[in-house]
Image (cartoon, rainbow, N blue to C red; front, side, top):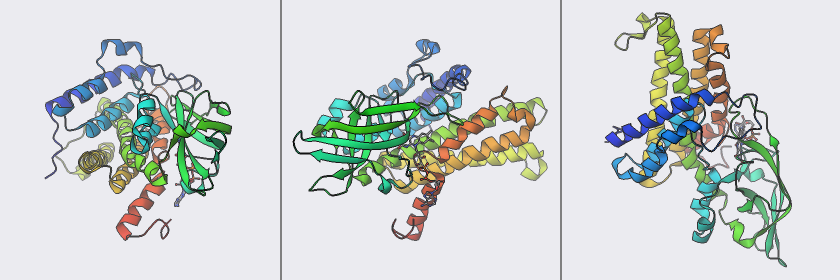
Length: 380
Ligand SMILES: Cc1cc2nc3c(=O)[nH]c(=O)nc-3n(C[C@H](O)[C@H](O)[C@H](O)COP(=O)(O)OP(=O)(O)OC[C@H]3O[C@@H](n4cnc5c(N)ncnc54)[C@H](O)[C@@H]3O)c2cc1C
């Protein structure tokens, strides 16, 4: 039987992460009008606080497992709005771990490697990639040309893992990935993109003009291996969504409490004030999403990442954050929209979870293919 009961160590780590999230919360709006600024490596309050991720590494045997607890630590970061300490771990690092050689892993594992998949032509269908990697038999280097848009950590990363179409006499047109380090001639980062929400996240476009990288930088992950990294990261994005939703629900319950509205967990919904009944239904959705995230990570710990379970978690997380933040504003009315409170920002921040690392529609497509037994060619 599956049991998701926490160990004592799990509880300590999560409580400490929540305490730190509350310390970080005062910085959550600092980037609203300062999108060109990058997150500091750590806020001053981090000085007196243990690094919960280092504690997780040190005491992992006493926890329910690294994957589950790490995801739940991200939930807490997003509860605070910005992380007290920055974690510069990107999907490019995951692909390097899955598809890189031992030598490549040694060289870059402690660097931040952004992932460059999305192009102006569209992000949902990686097969449409137009960026090219041409093999130059003289220098034996790869020459990268193309453009990527909406890349997280574009400015702050050390390198980017670029998905490109291979132009090589022996490997016609297949897709593969290449690490392009910052400072490589021809590699440029555009200005920070102005966004509706998550303005503290570093997002910009990248361009590659005859960018020459050594053969060593070819991480020979085919598209399947590259996309496998999403099965690890999608439940984590759903955990972000849980954090934002939790913050919205907690704030709204406090406001309702101030107005004399309290939930009764033992009474039927029909007998409760409308506002309490609405939030209680959302609490149930929050719990269901939490379980889906923990289940996906539990499966990953036991058997490796499960594609469908990850998509289920991501689809539910994306929907949850949109529904919860919308409903909390409904319940509080105009006060919910005021920038004096957190909801209007949480509402804007919530939208991304249904977009990056695969939109909600794409997750539902993956789930539908699995249930109906269709291949990507048959159902797309
Ligand atoms: C803040 C931010 C950060 C990002 N970070 C990164 C990053 O680090 N690296 C990276 O590579 N990308 C990144 N992205 C891009 C993101 O992954 C893409 O936006 C996403 O995959 C969707 O691609 P698209 O925007 O091109 O939409 P499109 O693919 O053009 O899709 C448009 C709409 O059509 C729907 N749609 C598309 N295909 C189908 C289908 N077959 N069936 C049903 N509906 C469909 C989509 O769900 C969407 O609603 C980021 C985006 C944002 C906003």
